[in-house]
Length: 140
Image 1 (tube, rainbow, N blue to C red):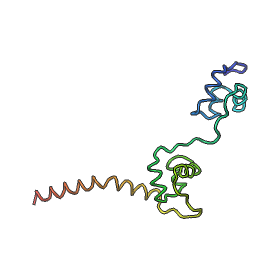
Image 2: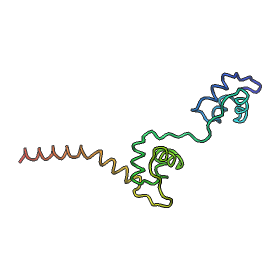
Image 3: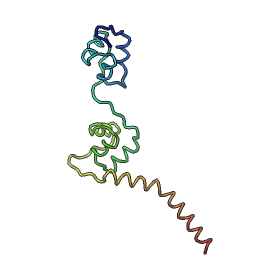
Image 4: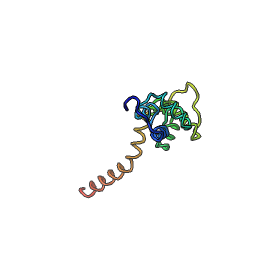
C-alpha cells in the first residue's frame, strides 16, 4: 500500500485474527511493519496472538508407534516437519512415557519405516507365494 493510505479497521482485524498467517505475513499484506500492525491491533482492542510456532502432527498413530519403538526424536522431527520441542510436547500431550536424557535410540527412522512397509506388504507377499505354489502344482 502506498504511504499515507488509510487501512480499514476491518482489514486489520481480519489479518490479525487469521491464524494461518504469521504476524510478519499479516503485516506485509497490510503494507505495515510487524510492530505497526501490533500497535493498530492493540488500539482496536484485539486479543494478543498466541506465541510460538504452530505445529500439527496429523498421523498420531504413526507418531505413537515411532515413539514406542524408540525412534530418535530429532529424526522424528525431520520426518514430521516440526521441531524437536514439538515432538516432546506431542508425546507429553498424548500421555506417552518420557524418555530418559541421554538414552540411545532403539531403532533408526529408516529401520522403523522399513519394518512398517514390510508389515504392510506381508499379506500381499503371502498371497503371491500361494498363487505361485498353486501354479507350480498345476504344471507338475
